Length: 317
Image (tube, rainbow, N blue to C red; front, side, top):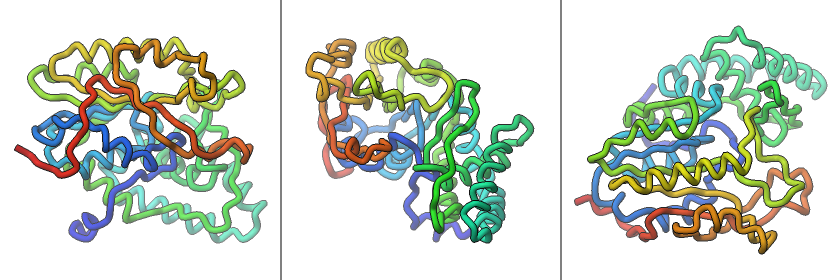
C-alpha cells in the first residue's frame, strides 16, 4: 500500500447505507457548534451507520482528540473493525468474489450465486473477515444497496439486477482504514446509552445522533433495518439521553430525524420531546421508496442543544 497516494483519495463510506448523510453534509456543516473550530474535542457517534458524517468529521477537524463510534448492528461494527485492522485481507477477498461473480454472464446464475452467498452470510460459522467480505458483496449486489434483517436477525434483501456492479473499491477501503487508524477510532457495539461512559468530564465532547428515522405516517414501516424495533418508546428514550448529556458541562450534540409535522401538521412528536432544544429543517432527497412517486425532496429535522453557527474557515486557537 502506498500511503501517500491513499491519503490523496477522499475517505467516504465503504458501504451503501439507507439514511446516509452524504447529501446533507453541507447543510449540517452550516450548523456545527463554533466550539469545534477552536479547541480539541472528542467526537462520539452512537448510530454510526454508513459513516458519511464520521469520515466528514475526521477529514474536516484535525483537532479531534478522541473518536468513538457505536452501532447495535454487530455485522456493521465488525466491518469497521476489519477495514481498520485488515484492509489487505478484505480487498483480497473482495477481488476474489468479484471476479467469480462477474464471470457469470447469465442473470439467473448471478441470482443463484447471490442467494448462496446470502445463505452463507446468515450462518453462524464465519469469522469476522469472511463475514465482512460477504457483507460488502451483498451490499453491492442486493436490491437498492439495502441492509435489512427479518425478525430472526437474518439478512433478507432480494437480489439486485446490476449489470456491472463495483464490488471492491480498493482506494476507498485504504483511505478509510488510514483515517480510522490515524485517529485510533474506538469501535463499540451496543446500545446508544453505553456511549455515556466515553465522556471525559474536563474535555469537550460532541455527539452526532442519526437514529432510525420515525415513519412519516402509519403506512411507512420501512424504518427498522435490524430485528430490534426502534419505536416511539425508543425515540423518547433517546430524547431523555440527549437531555441527560446536555446537562453535562462540556457536552454538545446534534441529532437528525424525520420531519413528521411536514406531512401531518398535528404530528408534533419531535417538537414535544425536544421542546427545549433548537429544531431546524434541512432538505433531503429520499430514493429508497419502491414507489417512484413517493421519492423526492422533503424536509428533515436537525436538532441541537446549542444553537451556534460555525465559522466557515478553520481557526484553531
